[in-house]
View: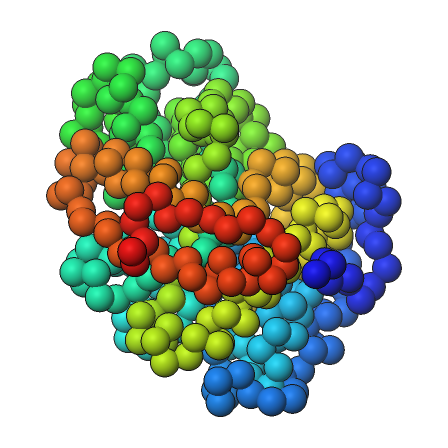
Length: 369
């Protein structure tokens, strides 16, 4: 099926380079009419539901739900069932919301998805689709760190103890021969857990020398004088690794498969639209970030452009990389070896992909069968 066409004029010719298009159009400087407001819940209810409650972060690595909401694509697929969004700042809070029924479906990083699944002994959630790959970098103060050999004795920020970026940094340091206590963050290198919103200020004040962070924090650091020393894509086969998954409550999946399928279809069509309309997509993303219920502030062009370009949307959950990330957490001492068999249920996603003329994706041996 062809990608959904936007309901507003093109923001820029697609031939323009993305960053150039961002600068030329002044993304975020003017709030446009929200197309989602034009797509009210109408028609038959999906699975008889009044609402479907979805959760996500206000990050560039969650571009799929942000843009899908901004363009009204999720509401279009759900018909008379209203989309009810909730924004989270941390994975554990989103998992708690999923377990309590406060949300039905969520976009989340691999580490909290793994933790949520293992802590519930495989009963709380299923990963049902991919969303984003990449979008993570090691950004350094170039006056203090000129090469990867200069990391010893330096302070490197990650967003949270045991989160996806924290695990990636600990694994990288261990492979380079550095000794770091995973819990305290102390050792040959100091790993300093710092909220993403605080990291740029800490970087400017010299409280940290570098940061292993997702977008748009990485691009923010570069915009204030930081240098990208390592793109995490370079550490993975084919440059692909999961940064954001789609998860669902197992109870909701069992009771409302048609609603889950509708959300997956919206996700797949949103990703297709993002890939075919990059200039318009980055504007839609920044407009949604400016929503008071998200962050209330659009990102400047020199941040949103690079951050968006560095993050790839994907329908494939890249299951093999999730297994590797779990192994990294085990090696770091942050996780006991988990039984991840059954964490994926990709049947509805593959049904949607087939209908859209796309190839099926694989659970890397971690599916239902």
